[in-house]
Length: 386
Image (cartoon, rainbow, N blue to C red):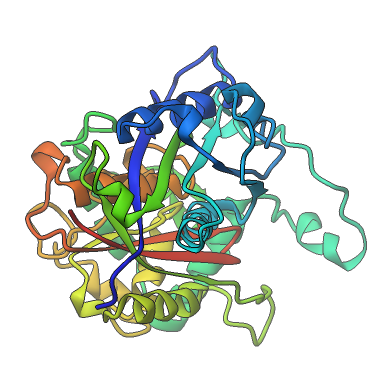
């Protein structure tokens, strides 16, 4: 295994969930301050800031002014949607190992929830560019949001490989079992396969319990060199490998939409850099905007053969009593939704050995995924435990 020269030295998570009266910028600044304090650094010690943007979010590179940062060596706003967190960490690692910067904060925050409004309305007010010509065909057909598009991807997998809704239910049930032990989780009451099957349709074949939460809040990590991290306040989490994958496929006949994701590209790159194979991974933290995203990512990383994801997740191995710890904080399905910072934050907590009742025993190697758009972008990180 190669030796990492960059580490995650700080983690900051704000209050998350139905937290009102705060802007996304406020959450972002809070998260960065918490991450710096967690590492034993002052905010003024930071000389790099990477901000996760997209969807007209409040948080931009003006966050640097809010934090009072001056003379930065690295400052940019990035957007690969849910894949951004992993991409930010990889760029931060490259920056600190090359000498471009010494301590880089990577942050995501959002505040879509409003008092007395349903979670379903959280993103409906986002402004979008007008779509004309042939590109408007899907809108005219009623495919107006991510739920419908992921439903199409899920149905494609079901029709091709025989994947079932009951198999997806096992993912939701396992992650809720983990969330029950996570004090930060929004949803902690146990659920059953029957609960999943009886939950209302969102976009068939996706039930309510197949879909992620909506959350207000923010999270940030501090990346520095491995040598420096070992002298700071927290157990360092080494960044052993990283990769990105952007397949560029479209939802049309002949494409692999719903059958293959960017994980098939980024996973091998990250694992090769880290000098590992799938069998070496101890803990898996996957982007889970939908249960289906978990299933297809497992296939594309090589934890099971293509088309066998349904059987792989259905034998109980994913939950606290199983031998394949996955999304051990409850993920975006049950814990909180902070884009790619959700799996990344839990990866750091587990790798440090600070997960309390849900702490896994073997934490030497953690694989973290980020998924952006509708299976359009993917990032992978391989992290080493303390």
